[in-house]
Amino acid sequence: MILVVFAMDFESTHFRSAFKHLNVDTCVFQSIGATVANDLDRVIRKNKYLLVILAGFAGGLSSRFRIGDVILDQNHTTPEILEIFREKGPHFYFGKNVTVEKMIDSSTKKRDLHRQTSADCCDMEASHIHALTSRHGIPMLSVRAISDTADQDLVIPSEVLINPSTLRPDIRRLSRHLLVNPAHIPALLKMARNAWIAQRKLSEALGRRIIPPLLPLVRFS
Image 1 (cartoon, one colour):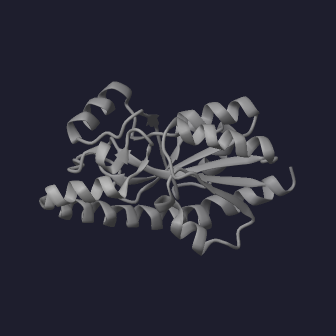
Image 2: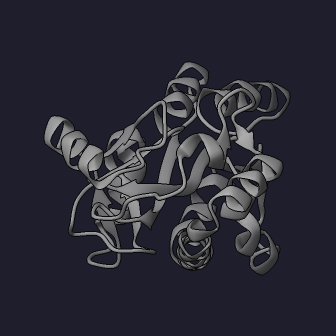
């Protein structure tokens, strides 16, 4: 069986509604970073999965990727799995992804991180999940959709978007921030629009181009 893992609900909504017919399990943990790996560890110990697909958003670090581009993460994917998609030609983007501990909220910091790592995008979960699946001996595929580009600043502070104490979204904290800073509302609406685009593109890639060719391999392994 394949397990598709999402950190946050808003990354998964369209996939879970549009591709219910696919014979895969789905987990949404509604948290970020290493917390996801800790929660996933308990799930893996209770079930026999033959492949884990980590799916979600990433921040762009390279100017070659735009909002909604779906990237197969080269450095957190089992090489044999990655090779399956390399053989399918130009239908996929491949890129280097780096895992960070905090959201990168400015274009300056994104440029600095790209210069330091040569990564195309960044997320907060992939390296933690990769370490976990490696310990369990389970192949992994990491798939990331760009939700903010390399030249985009996140006007709303990251600690407002994600509560640093709980590592979860905090609607009350965000509401209070917008009451004090109403000029940030357009930025939030833009972020929501970009997230909607990334969610749809990620869902379509998973449901139509990524999971179907993997199902026969899992079924007969």
